[in-house]
Image 1 (cartoon, one colour):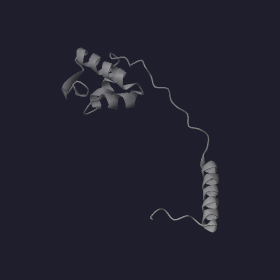
Image 2 (cartoon, rainbow, N blue to C red; image 1 turned 180 degrees about the vertical axis):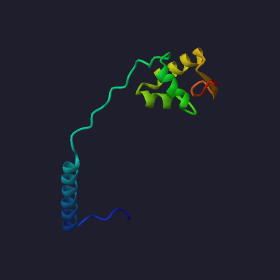
Image 3 (cartoon, one colour; image 1 turned 120 degrees about the vertical axis):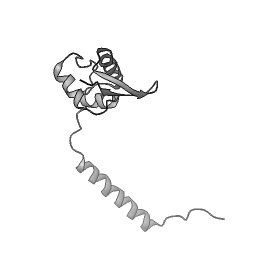
Image 4 (cartoon, one colour; image 1 turned 90 degrees about the vertical axis):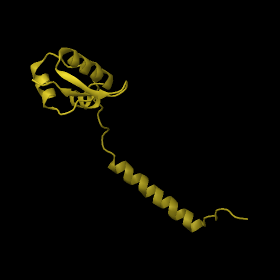
Length: 107
């Protein structure tokens, strides 16, 4: 019958020594735990001139791009982009019910 060949004692010892070395290396490499940044829930002010200036410099605006730039949640970024569209700062280019792409409005 077929099946996996059993490992000999010498080979088993070598595997255990190698695993122990790998574990000790991993413990040495691991430094202090990385700090997690709290993601903001409040969107930036849609009427702030500085923020509007930054947004006008961007070629395409997606919720992900806005969320990463301002360190906010994607759902908050979607609401923020809808506010900007209502103000006339950005225009909807295309999108479906779950993904939208905006561009800065012509000045």
